[in-house]
Image 1: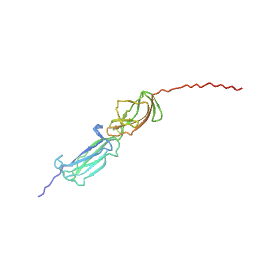
Image 2 (image 1 turned 45 degrees about the vertical axis):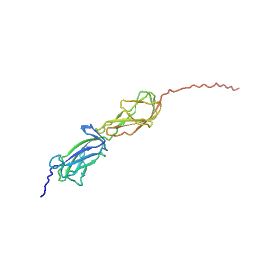
Image 3 (image 1 turned 30 degrees about the horizontal axis):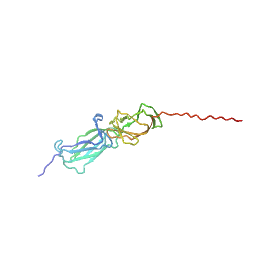
Image 4 (image 1 turned 30 degrees about the vertical axis):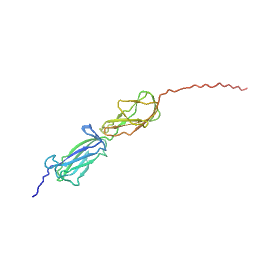
Length: 239
């Protein structure tokens, strides 16, 4: 006596995204970076969709933007087993990326092709030092003198690259190597008289961190002083 098992259902595959990621991309696509781990999870069905008791997943196939990218082979498929494969888009440029994937079971039942769109953002924000009021005079290309009544702001933008930008998250700054302070978008600050080395940077919603920028500000709140010196008169006569 023997039993014939009819496995006539293909596997079902799901795409998972790790961190960093953020919602709200074009067309509802999640934002990710080249470092975000992505995961294909496949389970084989037997007689009805979703029963999860098929004879086993044999392989998964993945393409990106219509080009075959990877084939993940299960070396030891088994009934009820889940095949999980992790990858990244480490070499893909910023922009929308279309992923197509499917799985085959041990009896060559092939899953219907599944499509997912991801918004890849590998570009950090750009922060500038804005001067509000007061008077300034350049010292060189990066550093300058400023009057005591000068106020400072740190506007930042997350640049759009190939239609994708996850958006600014936060900006921080420090003075003279001290502890970082979080900068609020509606905030401005002043500096006391003296030499100040300002360092600042911003991060976007998928943790792309801007390289630290630095500017030295010489704050001068004192007016010039002048002094007139009159020496003793001298007279000489040649006779």
